[in-house]
Image (cartoon, rainbow, N blue to C red; front, side, top):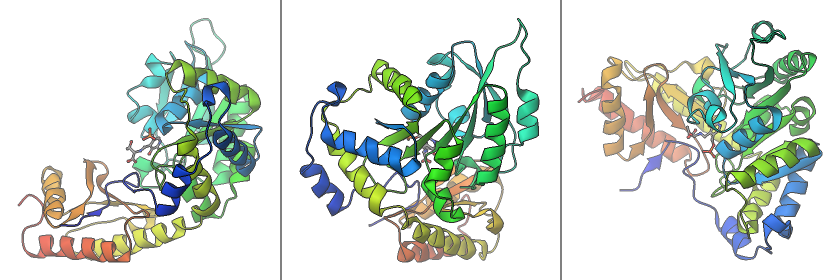
Amino acid sequence: MTTSDFRSDTVTAPSEAMRAAMASAEVGDDVFGDDPSVNAFERELASAFGTEAALFLPSGTMANICAIRAHTRPGDEIIVEEQSHIFRNEQAASAWICGVQAAPLPSDRGRLDPELVAATFRDEDIHHPRTTLVAVENTHNYQGGAVVPLDRIEALAEVAHARGAALHIDGARLWNASVASGTPLREYGRVADSIMVAFSKGLGCPAGSGLVGSAEVIARARRTRKGLGGGMRQVGVLTEPMRLALRDGIERLAEDHRNARTLAEGLNALAGVTVDLDAVETNIVFVRPPGDAASWPGFVEGLGERGVRCCFLGVREGVRFVTHLDVGADDVARAIAAARELVEGGGGAGS
Ligand code: TLP
């Protein structure tokens, strides 16, 4: 049975054009700085964001760790959103690798309140850690792909900079935020001190993330990357698809956003299924199946038996569907039909 896989936008297979770009990549040893494809990628990424420098990283998680390390010293504190990937999904790497403590704050769908952030900064006191970084996630994964508007990021950067701290964006899906809000990438580059962007999610590359920032921040990140074992060699085979995606892949995300809306509306129309339609801004849809939360994994299983894959995230978020390159309008129709069959057949949640 073929499947329609909505578990994540990380599940895509590289296109023929990407495979061809990988096969013909001109390469060298990147630890020596000799890989022309990597060098071109880093130049082009920095130029897309208008920053001094950029760095290839194998994953978004490593990029976030390198950024945190670049802005902080052991014993510092960083302010993060309480459902952020950095706080929730990176094994507390900021603590055990960077030696920093996280101060998690609640938010309005990923939009941290600048006043609360300002109030969370520590005063200079011999007892206190120093607050040296504020991290913003955009779009916000566990807040349903919510877009954090540029003016909010600017306000947060102002608070951080006034206290001598930096602002980092976990922009694994910043492309989606840019397309949905019409905000040019350079605007984010102007405001933030570092930005992580992922190429293995909506842009469909097999692997790879980027970090942009000042030459100094990127030099520090490059050093940490090596220490973490992330200095790779003929890695131009990975950055060539990333260059393609940077050039041609971003505008297409609007299609994923349209598919997510159709999916959200179709599922919300089913008896007992709830989707907060106002909360669907990009390519992520959180669904509350019928019945109580204990039976929701059964809903996911039932869909799986019908060839539709999605993820149960937890009681708070419910079930996550993510649209991407490899799921189109027919996959959306199939998912809605499968959910209808489950719900109407009395075989909904739990059976
Ligand atoms: N997100 C993955 C899982 O880890 C949950 C997904 O399927 O959504 N920041 C954000 C906002 C992310 O969503 C992710 C991955 C990362 C960082 C980490 O990137 P990778 O997986 O490349 O280390």
